[in-house]
Amino acid sequence: MLFKTKNIYRKRGIAVGEKKWWRLREIPDLDVEMEEAARKRVRSLTKPVGSLGMLEEIFIRLAGITGETIPDIRKKAVVVMCGDHGVAQAGVSAYPQEVTGLMMENFLRGKAAVNVLAELARATVIVADLGSLLEPVPEGVIDCKVRKGTRNFLEEPAMTVSEVIQAVEVGVRLAHQLGGQGVRLIAPGEMGIGNTTSASALAAALTGKDVGALTGRGTGITDENLVRKQEVIRQALALHQPGNAMEALICVGGLEIAGMVGLYLGAAQMRMAAVMDGLISTVAAAIAVEMEPEVKSYLFASHLSAEPAHRILLNRLQLTPLITAEMRLGEASGASLAFPLFDAAVALAERMATFADLGLPEPD
Image (cartoon, rainbow, N blue to C red; front, side, top):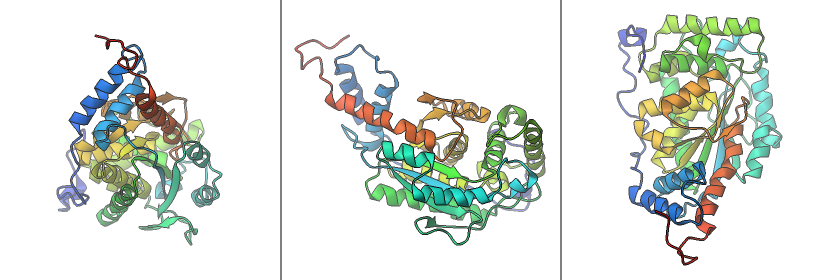
């Protein structure tokens, strides 16, 4: 990890991340025998070797994750974590924070982009409020609010240690609940005005890359506001100097991002494949991998966002996106769009004829 050595939180005697409190159970190893059986199955299908490209890899990896010959991924869930950001007060977004609450209601009505795409993929959309400013929480939204928005990290840490722990635990427990209901494919998504600023700051802390190379326009801000956004991130990182991924989350993160970190951790514990969305979803996944390297084996990259930090994070995770469509919406819209590719991968492996079916030898 590329973190600064001076750490105001360590100097205060706060040890974060040493005790693995997020483990409700151990992350199981992938089923290598099932992976090998899936690899042989794919090789036996009536097609040139490797001609289905990444669809073949999807099927093989799903077999290792689920431990099933033909992975049952009929039950899919999109979990949209919501939270507001104090740093929005610094003029880093094109939209007011009221939009977070309005979009939560839009999700409930089934009228957001992620609703449309999830319906096409036969996936359930779940909305959870970890930290929006909206009161009361609308009926139909899971109310797990830790606090009403984060603090302005340009002036002080966005969250306390306790608040981050609460938010991560929400995600872990929700993943366990969904896994217990038979969900095998999950897409963590988010909604929160100001969260691309938070995600870009986290990406800079994780990678050590220049803020200017990482920070994009998010909701479509002007050139002037983009310069302001980058300067806000630089100032915040200089102020806090986080010493590890968890401390970065405390200093410049968001409650919904912490919730997604928990979703990834819990999904791996429950043998669920987790499909990342864009920048914000992926920075949460990167933090989860810093906390538990085994999580990486359960991750899939759905698409390549137009946000510049996204490509850098995907390269860091060594994951190749399935779709390149220049999207930057969030909500798990890109992940939902990719869901049918997973269905296709399983269906092809299950239904295609083999060379043996045709009385032919398998290719060398």
